[in-house]
Image 1 (cartoon, rainbow, N blue to C red):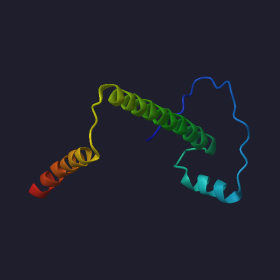
Image 2: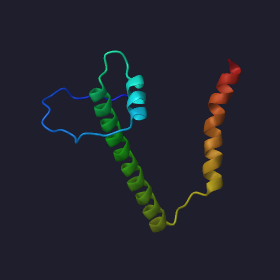
Image 3: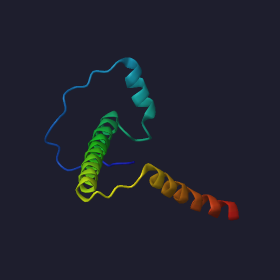
Length: 99
């Protein structure tokens, strides 16, 4: 997932980050042409903020689904879920086999 750093005014800084030489070399080796280490770190921070927000939303949805199931008494068995997933996987496999 690629995020882009906003280039509007920068009004805050992060504290200096101390890492061992191995981590710094690995980060520098991962840079693409024209990318700075600062840009790489900023992108990593933005990505992880977004990822953690998605994780929190997932947990909230899961808890809401649990509460709804408890309230209504409507549950889906693990066997039904797995059968549905198997069916979802079978469709692309069948399509690929026809090619």
